[in-house]
Amino acid sequence: MKLNIAVLSGDGIGPEVTDQAIKVLKAIAVEFDHTFLFSSAPVGAIAIDETGNPLPDSTLDLCKKSDAVLFGSIGDPKYDNDPNAKVRPEQGLLKLRKELGLYANIRPVKAYDMLLDKSPLKKENIQGTDISIYRELTGGIYFGEKKQNEEGTWASDLCEYSKEEIERISHLAFKAAQARRSKLTLVDKANVLETSRLWRKVVKQVAESYPDVELDFLFVDNAAMQMILNPKQFDVILTENMFGDIISDEASVIGGSIGLLASASVGDKHALFEPIHGSYPQATGKGIANPVASILSAAMLLDHFELYQEAELIRKAVEKSLQLNITTPDLNPDSENITTSKVGDFIEDYINNPQDSNINFQNLHLGQSTII
Ligand code: IPM
Ligand code: MN
Image 1 (tube, rainbow, N blue to C red):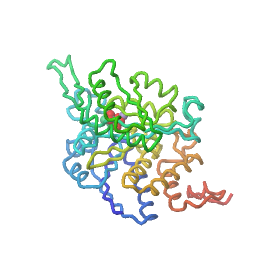
Image 2: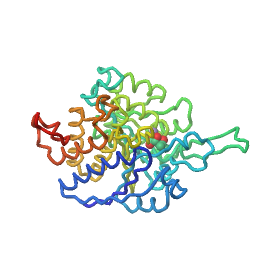
Image 3: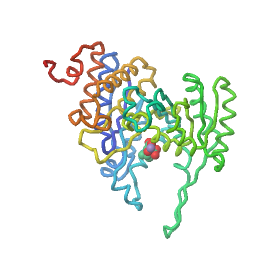
Image 4: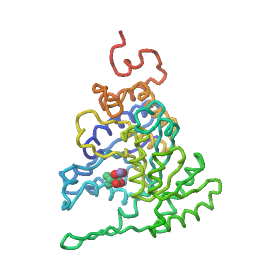
């Protein structure tokens, strides 16, 4: 298969983790005889510095004509601490999602057996957790009208949803549930919000076409608690934009590090793949950022093009790295010498030689001497 992939690595640790995903995709291309062509373009704070615009037209054009976008991360503290900033890096990502029509953001959350001890939550509560969060991505309070009075003493963000916006992501979420454990939980705040009541009404209607899927409802405050108390109860979670943003960061605690959580953002025409973590400015350039979320986002990219075997091999390689503790300090504080790119090298190497399983495996795949 030939794929043109736009690479928007963005700010902070974005470039270093995205480099590892590219390395891994290149190894897959060789191994399975595909052609993946990568073209880079600026987005976020770096694009503001270069052009004054967090999403330059040339970047958007490149994304529109590519088959997929591989995204890094966005954000810079100099904007976070300036409430009066006229342009912000995040606007680039939000505009990109809107322009590409990426209305469904899919965030898998998994408790890996070998990482159960890394989570602050009790092992017995999280073991076996496997959740797929479907977060609506182009509507809600993120995109409603924003206002402020002239004195800067009052502000408003409007939250709006239409039936169509709810329907299209609901169909994707129900189909996903059918292919999984046939359970879908709608997370909302229908006891307070009109938009949430519309979500409930529309989702119930859509559910009639999926009688084999068990549908239940949870208020977001309760869902936040249940996510920590008993995450195993969830299969597919469907929710609006802001609740999905919050609940997915919370869910990352189950896996032991937010550096593991990948995502796919899909629409009818385009698709973008990005780790859910932010730009982690404190870690930039230190080689300590976990590249796994970016690498697993690349696996989701392959899934999107039905390259399932290829995606599976990446996941196997990632699991092998976790098993052998070849991980960055977020998961393994004693691993200063296992850098972002070392993890990428290991995963790349495993893809090139998946059959290797000798006792020197770890050294071999870290490019170290196998002579003890
Ligand atoms: C995410 C991020 C973004 C969001 C920010 C960077 C705009 O937190 O992808 O979860 O809020 O959607
Ligand atoms: Mn977020």
